[in-house]
Image (cartoon, rainbow, N blue to C red; front, side):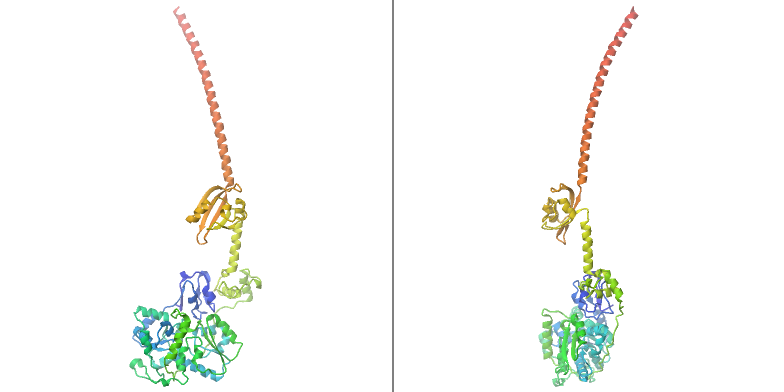
Amino acid sequence: MFYLDFQKADCKNCYKCLRSCPVKAIDARDGQAKIIESRCILCGHCTKVCPQNAKSVHNDCRAIEQLLSRNKRVIASVAPAFVSSFGVRSFDAFRTALCALGFSDAYETAEGAAAVSSEYKKLLASGKYENFITSACPAVNRAIELYHHEALKYLAPVDSPMVAHAKILKKRFPDAEIVFVGPCIAKKREAKESGVLSGALTFEELTELFRLHGIELGDEAQASDRIEKPVKVGKKTDGANQEAAAVSAAADVTADGSAMRAKFYPISRGIIKSFGSLPEGYEYIAVDGVERLDQAIDDLLGVKNVFLEINACDGACVNGPCAIKHAGGSVEANVKVRNYTNSSPANIVSDYPDISYKHKARMTGDRVPTDDELKSILAKTGKTEPQHELNCGACGYSTCREKAWAVINGYAEVEMCVPYMREKAESMGNVIIENSPNGIIVCNNDLQVTEINRRAQALTGNNSPEYIFDCFDPSAVFKAAESGIATHVEKQKLDKTGKYTDINIVPLAKEKALLIVLTDVTDRVNYDEELNKVKRDTLSVTDAVIEKQMRVAQEIASLLGETTAETKVALLKLKQTMVEDKNN
């Protein structure tokens, strides 16, 4: 299971995540977006921009609950951004809630941040760095390791504050399991790869666990009065109170106050602020947001003596993908972190273990296509000349060639080119409509004609009708528009041309329009009329013949009647004569 989960059914083929991904770690084939794990830097930007919420952070609540149930010492390392996400003004209230959840104790990751800042100062003072890039953000580190090998020499060879703090806690409590708590997704992978952390829990996941276990953070006003006491790292302590040695002297804070200022880390320019007095010889610049990451690193290659603080999240960690959002946004979050940092004493980090880290180049495993291969893919979308490459970005890729690269590597489809597919669809649609043997008219719900093909113009005798009643009696159209039900009319006569048509009217609810199809049935109607005339003529002739036959029959009957009567008289006379002759 990767650190980002996709709900397939919710992905709507919009490519918004692909457009927003700074490293194009999205496989967008078959209408569904999937993470390309080998390319992903886990900035979490896709989870924030997805309009369908189809992408979510893999939930580790169950795994952490199981870890807490093992009757082992589990210590939380809490990112300083907790102040802005949870609305508390001291760490005491937060520690209490974490202990109620099952953690043995909790400490601020700012301890590790102070150690990291101290290492940065040493490296800057060495004079070995032409330019310097901070290594606090794991998403930025992964981006440089994967995509900016030429900038690796500038990336600080130092652990992130999370890993540094885990090493500090491991030195203090060798048998402890360390779990990071913060607003970052990339920390999950970094924790797994570190070898010193047992997991990373996001603020959103922690909120879920608090809710499931009925744990509420203490009253903010009361918590603000319980300022934590500084803890000096490096001294071996006994087991009382989770083996944490509390020292009371605020004077133990390092001379330049950097341990306290390390709590600035989660806001923009927070690392720079942690220095107090800036080492000389560098221009100090902060860049926030994945949209500016690539450009900032590319620009750095052409200059010297620049200290570059880069955060993958716009507004730095307080605006992380799993931070708890509030109405005041990153502005209010900045204010909360500043107020907290300026009002709370620091945990002293006078001694810490080795926190160096050698960043190495990583490979994505992608194939570099030849120019001919790119041209072949481009040609499939009609891009045979450089001027055909619009580079519109509608497919999610910045350039047409970048999209062709993705097709060759199996991350995209040729049909993702929106201008090409639209042109193709419109062209095919127009060909079908214009060459249809039927008349086609589209009108809006106000019965204004918006589209009419040549056949409909010929049938209605109107080349540019404004309303449907300029074409024919609109009664049936009114009925379909009001009812939303398809309507059929047979043999309607069109006054201007005398043509007869069958009319099918189909309401298009989503488009708020009506599709009207006219089928010419004039020949059929004329044939029916001719057939009816033949039938009428045939019936008339039949009646005349019958009448004549009856008259002839009557005449024959009359003649037969007269002949029979004469025969009867003659026979009677013959009979009488014969009788008389016999008697004589």
